[in-house]
Image (cartoon, rainbow, N blue to C red; front, side, top):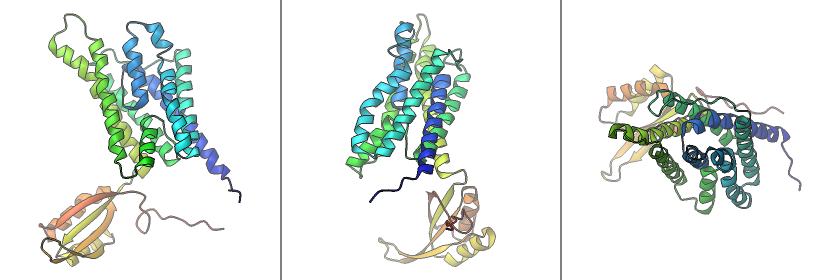
Length: 322
């Protein structure tokens, strides 16, 4: 039986991969490589190598250690592994994204496109560059993850590990790898130390690329999360209280939100309790906390994030009418 190909979604996925490659390539050229930022991953390694070699041998840095070339070459083994071990569609989309990313960076360098370069490691423009680069990369990453693609590097490594061991905490492993790369960017500060500098200037020179790389990495991760879960993030309140009726009624009347009451039993005390479950918008978190404290200051409360919430009072998922 032949599988029907959804050409509309296929074209959209490819267009997202192309757009992401161009946007990220521009961000890397404009903000990251020019300032020595290394916000994790293979692109961060490429940026470190380029900026480490550039002061002593510009020709070598612009040819064999060009960030566009290094990013592509280091990703090739991961492409091969993902093709045989992971979803073929994911692999193809990622190859397109990384290929265009590297090609676009190379084109921008060939035409000598201007870069956003801070005058010194202590310049406040570094903060703007780190934040702007993180936002651009995060937007692209968010859309790529929603359309079964990635920017290669640690994303592929994470998927390969999860395929081998689904129990492994892959996210923390990826973050650990990115932190190592971010920390390694301090080497660029060591290379930039000049004779006669005082200890404060030396410390600033070493820590500046680390801090700015970390800021860029954080902004990228937060932006990607917003793109995936939406700007109107929701929060789940789980409340264990003996004043269930008062709390539930107040939430219902004042906030017009539904509340589900679940029976619960404490293992240590063996006592029966009632747990209230309520989903609200993130901006309503303080209002719910005030209601809980009003009726039961000793209530046990824990809050979790909710993604893709649908239903009355939230996004309504419409059924296809054929």
